[in-house]
Length: 208
Image (tube, rainbow, N blue to C red; front, side, top):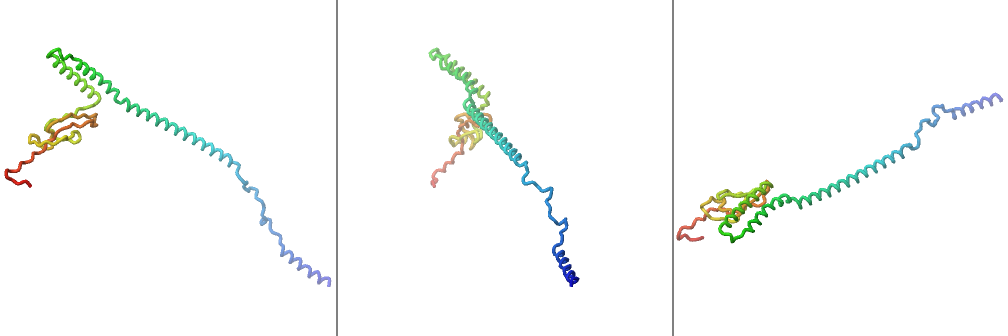
């Protein structure tokens, strides 16, 4: 009886061992020694660096904006002064012309026949001075001749004249000279332009 009981106890032990076997050491999870830390310590430093760079860029932008505004104001001042004093040199040269005209006006008309000659000489001198000023400042005269072809870029037709003396669309008479500054037109020459005369209907012809 005793032997039989021991034999019954052994299978129970074997069954217990098979149910709860020991797991190998390799399968037991262990904490890794190289586990990453929660947050890198360099993040605050990087944030401060970005803030410093942003502040530097902001300062550079404000300085560039201020310089651009100052340059705009200087340019505006220069433009204003250029408009106000653009004719300073030209006006200074015209003073001599004005002086010559004052001298011509001061001539005593009761001095006799020589007065006319003196006035004419003074006018010629004044015109030469004025032409010299115009040449110095690149102001050129536009003075077409009778018979020249009409140039719409330099001439202004004041009226049409029926005539056979001058071909149609050609200048019949110069009313006023024109002027240009370098290549820019200051004033066109004012002219009368010829057109072909209208043929008179034969005597006795009925008008339509």
